Image (cartoon, rainbow, N blue to C red; front, top):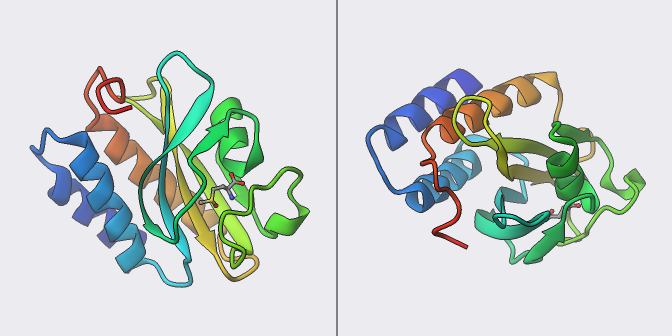
Length: 160
Ligand code: SME
């Protein structure tokens, strides 16, 4: 599936749905269905008032539950508020190996509203090295922005 198609599908999936957890779960399923060569796709969400990520909706194998900001690829993306594209996770200092099949990874900060605070990250893992490039970064940053704009002002306070 192209990113244009996936992002349009996401828009129609979440349009008018006031249930952020359901929307994140469907978003993870859409990524899993629409992209190839993945072994994990989903979200870690920021615990309000803490520099800590907690496992959110995802597809793939069971994963680690808590990731402090600054740790691993997810924690780095959250702390630096910048997308991380890692072509070989074994070369990334502090990479957290939830699934030993993971070889490359992309993590995009998830912001609430239009450019609001970081409320989590979108994480995709692949069993192939160099799976994610510039097209993926752009497509997934748009995906995260669409989702972020759908999140209510109190997200994720009433979930975690
Ligand atoms: N590898 C990630 C941890 C999350 S799992 O891949 C699902 C990291 O280093 O942050």
